[in-house]
Length: 118
Image (cartoon, rainbow, N blue to C red; front, top):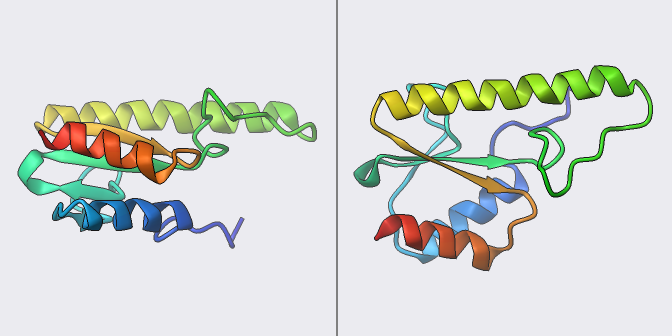
């Protein structure tokens, strides 16, 4: 577990690249906001979380491990509960919240960011 990265993961770096290519200014890993969003676009008041499919229980990709299954199901359920709580806290501060998933390709990320940028 010590080797699990929380910042500057491969998928987060991809999202950063897509934002730069779209000409969007952003801040990364903003600790002053609830949940330390991976990316924040201040002029849009948009907080972006780049979620790993396993750790955040992606509805499309998540499969619980066979070993110690009950513990993992509880762990992922708690992660999802925390994600909802953090999103509520950010919305109460006037931020919109976007979740990008590990399985999202660059084109899908770009389309979602462009839609939010309008």
